[in-house]
Image 1 (cartoon, rainbow, N blue to C red):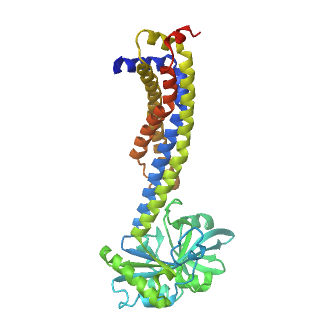
Image 2: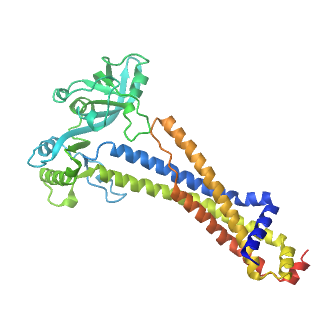
Image 3: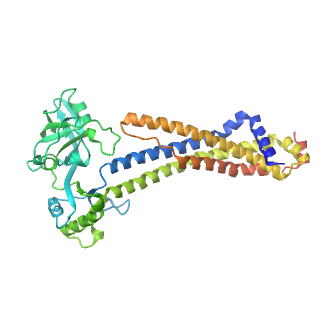
Length: 412
């Protein structure tokens, strides 16, 4: 038999039982659709997160208290009060960090805010006037506090859109006093809505001078972060090393493995987040692939039933000269065609659903969530679906090819 004849015979065999063929590929369709959804949405999430990280500027360096964790059980590395005023003094010395352009100590925490009878739980962010430049924040009303407010510990704040919505009931907040914990702060600016799905949710923040946050609200003498900017991107690597050497000297550390701080560039952060999101995406792909295994088992069962029902057909074809290889090829091709069709349908459905969900997330969260067509997921899904057909269709096809023509023609 020619390959064309085997193909036509396989198509006729599938079209004879269309409802059974559809039910057979249902598990494959679900599995491939799930893979397409996970890979597409994972890629969209990764692009969103990395875009926001890189939006902080590639010349930005963050110093984080505590050493970098060496494993899941290294909890003590995550919490530390190692960054203090003496470190700011050491880092601002041009002899220690010559390419430093700007430095901003950061403290943050959580607390209740109130205005009149309204209350709202907010994120407290203490920084300097450089917050606007570092995070590219532009108040929609009022303005940011200035550099003189930091040493004077001024009771001023810039608030996010959610804080306005929950506290002011449509009133103009600029110039009003809100209470954060037990401290009254005058609102000098309001931030436009950025969306709760962003990496830094400024909508629920109250931003104030870090000195005010430290002394009057949080009651801490250490920093949660130190953010440093260099003049150019080319100076980031050498500045990061200068920061490490300066802080080791400030903390009396001679062994780098005993660092009680972590220096992180934006590229480092982007690489780590990219690795994490990719690993999570492919883990979910592995979970979704279980549906393909279940679908493969279903195909094998249905094909075995089909072989039994078509025993007389097999006997007749063998009596007319079909070889074992012809029968094997026909039934194997039927299984591969089933899974390939299921893969194509799954890719189409996954693409449509991923696009709809991406648009919904973009509008619902108010973020720039881009739809990404997962070429890797599509190729993987189509290839795996065909492989499932070969693997799980092989046994039924083999059973069909081994039937004796005489016994098959006698089968009732």
